[in-house]
Length: 31
Image 1: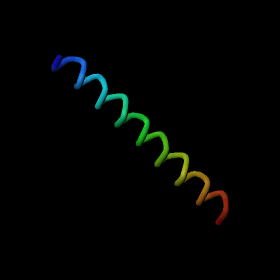
Image 2: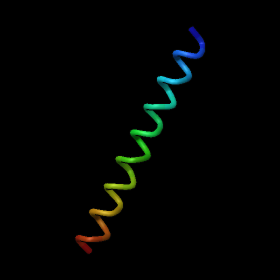
Image 3: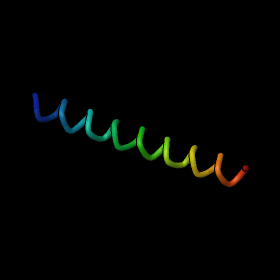
Image 4: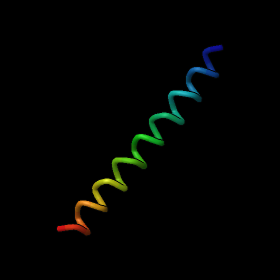
């Protein structure tokens, strides 16, 4: 149970980081 929640939060954190990196890259390209 705990391992499932940990893996889920880990995937969510990775997705959030990926989105942030892509957003920053787009902003830099626009500028």
